[in-house]
Amino acid sequence: MPLRFAFLVLEEHPYGREMLRLLLESGFVPSVVIQEVSRVGDEERRKFLDRIAGQPVPPRLTELLAGRKVPVYCVANHNDTTCADLLVAEKPEVVVLGGTRIIKPHLLEIPPRGTVNCHPGLLPWLRGSASIGWALYKDLPQGATAHFIDPGIDTGDIIVRRELPVYRRDTYESLCARVATLAGELMVESVRHLSEGKAPRMPQEQGVGETFKVIPDDLLEEGRRRLAEGRYSHFAD
Image 1 (cartoon, one colour):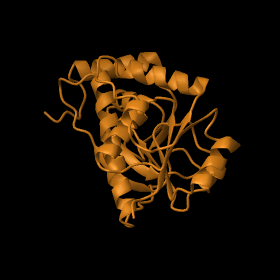
Image 2 (cartoon, helix red, strand yellow):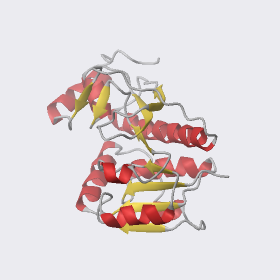
Image 3 (cartoon, helix red, strand yellow):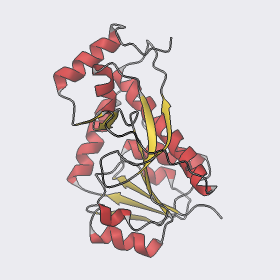
């Protein structure tokens, strides 16, 4: 039987839209979609659209789900009781995160096979926010990591991790868009593994990497210059 999974996403977040696009194209259809409609969602969507300015934007969720019998619910906060009640009623085996706020432990306890996320950076070296900008500033490789969620921030067991090749024609905006696509591809792999009952679980190394907050504008600009001037050390060409 197909894996029964719920898809959680901030309202119309492009990161989640790209992930859902790739899941659907691969035949993985969520049993339910729960969107958070909030000021947090509005702000995160705006920030992500700024990051991918000039790049193709994925179709809206309504377009992606058109013609499919997938219930879509809206909640004010994914951590509230309404969302928990929906998950309990829908009984997903797994919850897939397509760009959300930090999910609280009481929600993580609901799906029997876990909650999975795809982080837009290589774990454990780049946890937290703004991984693409921090990777440029600190001269680290770009990539994405699909992992199980635990109560920490990006500390759960890794399912699959892959480096993104960076080309000299890339910009910060193209990297943000390409990492989002890679994240979607890794989520497809993860859901396939879970469907087959053989998802890897690789514990993260302790004491390795950092947990970052939003990158300051001046440090992001330095990272952008590093990329534009060819001083980035991880070009594939």
